[in-house]
Length: 481
Ligand SMILES: *Cc1c(COP(=O)(O)O)cnc(C)c1O
Image (tube, rainbow, N blue to C red; front, side):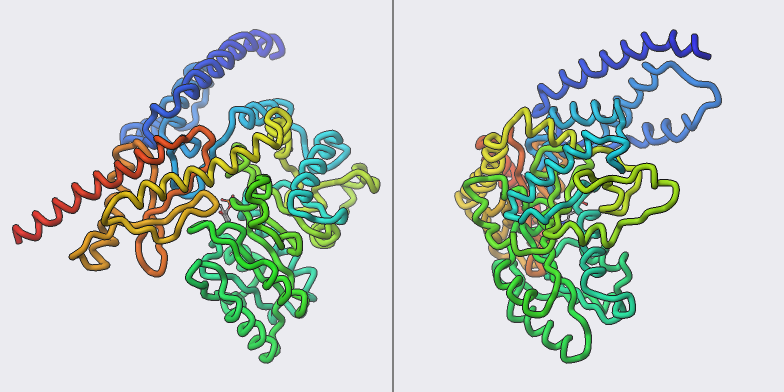
């Protein structure tokens, strides 16, 4: 058996080198790719037919199949012109950090198992906490994504503010623009839907603070226990930022936990030019901050920060007999006591590598570039008649819609949906839709450091071309009927 493994080392090494070479070649020309490709029916049938074999196959053959059939068929979320959802402009540095980390595969649960990786996680978390303006008592940990970061924070919030007997009375407050993962998290930790209050937003898609105050007063009067308000630092639809200072004033008055969902938007803290927009975030009890969005990381890489790290250990610390050998002292940390995971990858290392190599000045420039990209798009939209800006560029997002005269709102909704569809089919850029004020709109979220002014203007021009073509078709159909 041993000899067989020895013999296999060399073909494996060759296959790895070949893979890295071809991957790097493909990356150098990423813009020439269409933004997405979907597996054909034949490919799906082949993959299903392949099954799990009894006898193994040559590694190179399997790798080639995977490159061709699996990895080729995806939305390229790191394509410079992918503007749908929140893109992931993953840096090659993050990828390098990822393969290094998975090669050595440190167990990042305890200090004993990976002391220096735990130290780096502390340092990266401390850097993020400093960006947020948090005190020395703060801390946090890396989790898989914003959804898990929100869930982790909400668990800490519930445990800090409610006794177990009070769980049925607790109420949490989100806005109409809060990401769905927050309500999902609240449901996971046991809240009924009637314990989750959804507060309308104002014309700028920020939580309506008067209605929030009213809801809290109403619930207090009814004997309920308001325990958490969730604020947006960059909502997913529009990039809107809730009024932190007014929310914290309310929360402090009523001993409510304030959580800020900054999954994509907290990265604005790393920009020296725009960080002031998140002023007041330092008063929040917890902050979610994804690194696999605007901080250039591959999946999965997100952080949850808390102002008082004891709130995490209060919620997640366990000390079973089989883990006692890994006890940590005061300066050390066992991250399995900070969050829901026991065995966990060292997610901070790839971000550490990226930050070390690029430096924070470059990160700051990259964040500011995202703001600029959305502004270029908005500028181009305003040049074209029959287009409306629904929510102006902010935090790298702009919402807009094609609204030619003479069409009903329903027809305009359908038209914008079709524009997005045809843009995807064209493959030049990925522009998806969302809904604002009950109407379908197009949305661009642009974070990629390698996207430029031409990319943004050409994308809008192409959308206009598609829109004009569809309108002519529509008119023809009308005249024919
Ligand atoms: C992306 C996003 C999330 C979800 O984060 P995942 O990393 O996809 O789990 C939550 N909230 C906001 C505001 C987001 O933009």
